Image (cartoon, rainbow over all chains, first blue to last red; front, side, top):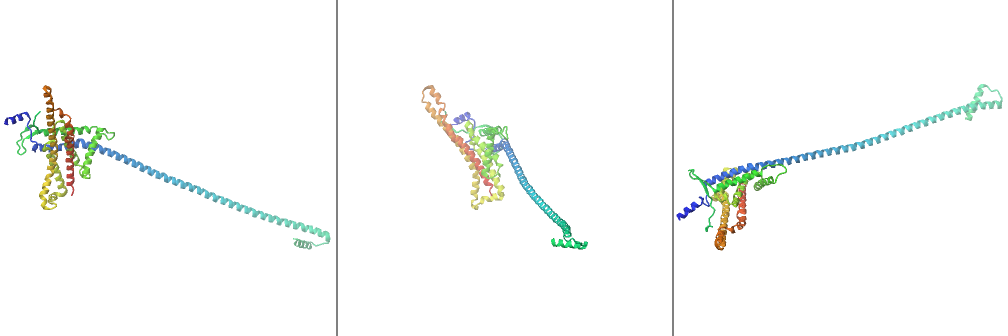
Length: 176
Length: 255
């Protein structure tokens, strides 16, 4: 039996028990675990997280820029719309102003024309009246002298100048 | 082909005499050597994956690395509900990576470091200290001690027991699963070796003697059983260990 055990020992390297807690192995495995944590952190997590962060920053930046561009476009659009509205309003105002002015002008012209026409008419009437008076007066004179001639011829009597005149005026008055 | 079944024990390659009491001699075991190989693999993979990083137009390698990091971030954030435990992310990720690679390294014929209880005990103790420190940070030392007397003072011994059971159960669950995988794989190889020896031993003469020494039947089947015992169990235990770590610490932070 002893012989067999010796043989087995010689054939195989020394082994530890199947279920056992070896203090040194235990301690070294704890250290190994922490070394592994450090290594995996340094060689996997740090570089990858860095690159992920970089990509995230880049994406964030692009989104931010896009948003800014959109904001700008929106504000420009508002501005344009506003100025367009203003232009419309201004155009309408100009048109209405022009219309109003034209109306006023037209009214003024018409009124002036009416006034002028009225003035002309009044003047013409006055002229006509004057002419009429003048004509009547002339006719009166004509008729006076004519009547005197006729009367002188008919009556053939000497009449004083004063009587003469009186006679004529009476006649005219009667005639006129 | 040996007729008796032997489990794959962790070999001790060197013993350094320290003379320190309790701790004893420093033994460089297979567990430690393979652990260091695992660390080199993980770190090398990290360095390889994060080479030539770009912000735009990324390579598949970088996409994979980013996916790993995002998965780690989301795993911790979803299970703790917020960014409060972001410091835990590298720890949990390292734990998961180490556990998975350690479990799966048995596929290339090395002995899993996780088939040694010392490894899981080390991890569980670290997690236990983190849970306890989170509890003390949240409730204060008095509050932490008072927590043991809830809901009634009589429960104190049971509460202490359940507190201590946390790291023990975490370590033993992981260890047991991986060790059982090792044992079952060993059993399957052993049984298939015996079977092929018996089968090809039927061939008479030198040919039969030669072939019966080669475990030919062991070629296909272990790959199929390995899907469960190595791949599934290996990933599952790593996931469970990390899940429990995050959950316990998140719970500890609740008032």
